Image (cartoon, rainbow, N blue to C red; front, side, top):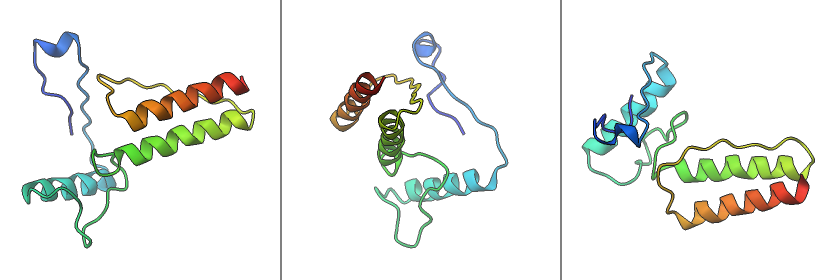
Length: 111
């Protein structure tokens, strides 16, 4: 599995990630994704396996990120350590921007 295009020109600006695995759960998700892309569909079919391990835009990436951010907001509200480390090349999605602002405000309020 890999992300990015391994472009020598953009390598100074973007980080490509590669994972070599024999994990059957990850490979199953990846297999379902490639089958879906081969059919040129925009969503998983009702009888297809919904990704369980991989976060794949536009299928489950945003909803999972929101859930993870909400979890950290809950930790902050409860007085527990709350922390996020995020590397983003380009953030334009308004929903995610607002969610990150919400998290930062909670961190300030409960720190």
